[in-house]
Amino acid sequence: MTSRSSSTATGPSRFATAEGRQRPHLLARKIRLEGCDDVPTLAGFFCARACERYRLPRLELSPNALRAAESTEWPGNVRELAHAVEAAVIRAAGQHAAQVERTHLFPDGPSSAIGAPDPVTFQAATRTFQADFLRQALEDNNWNVVETARRLDLARSHVYNLIRAFALERDKK
Image 1 (cartoon, rainbow, N blue to C red):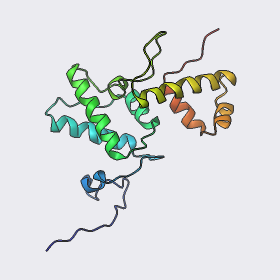
Image 2 (image 1 turned 90 degrees about the vertical axis):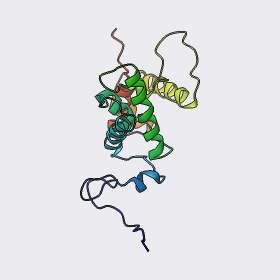
Image 3 (image 1 turned 180 degrees about the vertical axis):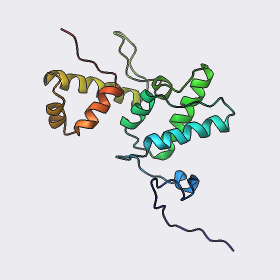
């Protein structure tokens, strides 16, 4: 008779064993990613796993894709991140891309085109709202990130991550 241990890992990542192997039973559990610093590591793991699983050329996530994944809220769990990265890998491979880009990870990302159709998914609409809301808050504060972060009750570093993720730029007047 075999039994399963329910102990947790005590290393740099709670998803790996001491030998560095991933612990799939932890990835299958509902682990919330709110405020989790493991998003880039997990996204890289899921990218490599998807390439291997579908026998695709080895792809890596671009720095922009990693920043976007890190600044995105993953209210579901680890599976939500895994599915998003897997779909992004398949899209990137289908386009013969050299790496997985932000547009592969979030194909329904915020639209910058005037007169573009409304977003079709809740997540896309939420990202569009967040980008517009952040842009307006930054403009109201003359792009003072510290004051914007204070007024929005966000960490300054998170505001910078959102600016990069949404590719916001100050209007040149």
